[in-house]
Length: 356
Image (cartoon, rainbow, N blue to C red; front, side, top):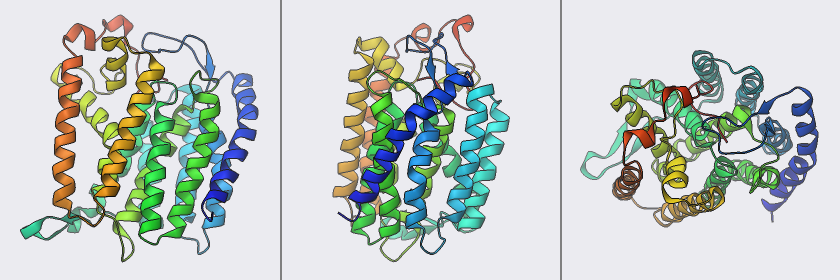
């Protein structure tokens, strides 16, 4: 009951604020128009992320008893502001990366979020990163931030996968005695539930880059808190397994684009969710439900392995990556189907496609 109240509070606040944000986005002409890689059929306002950020903020302030989350709130606010501008004017990828790096710097140096070790592996023991800790933390925060941004390609996909991610991270926080992180996670569950009322199955609003970057950034921060801080931390590969779908999708599209000599920052339809819809004739709604179920399955595996060594997690991760890779490869049977003609390719908003 202690964690249900924050979830309900953020749910209702987000649901109430969403119509106001939709009206504001329309008034400011912040609209996502159907295009070459867009699977939606009608012009749809963005900035849904602003509503669930506002809906979550009171819960974060409530949980922030000792000021531990102050740096996170500051960095997240910066990301939201940058995303709002990007949704309206489409900033270049260099500006977006710089913006994310600044937010990550606030989190690392202001909030003490650092990945200092990457797990324990049998005879090798605990692998400490030493001087590489800070660069690796930047890589992971910016990488996961972009991974959720990349996943934002179908109605409800990024929001639902993130909701499931926060749900399992919240459960892990409870199991390891971290009530502050658990409160924040269940606040996210409620806020994203309120957002999905307007985003799935037929979207009345998109979260925009303001929302997707905020979600990825927050998932990265919570994962660091759970795996690097406190006496009862979960294994460092717990969030990797849980978030394997967006992580794999990001690595897949980067490898495929580079392998075909394409700019990795220019969008195409090589994403796993696009391939599922285009190659199997599955409706976008069913594709989203399948990917939600897959994320939940990864989450169940991650919870079942709590208490196991990193080596055990690594075996599961490697096998899951192999299965995802074979699936993606079988769906992408020809270059022409993965990559449309240049005239049909739309530049992505920064590092990744916004594309719901």
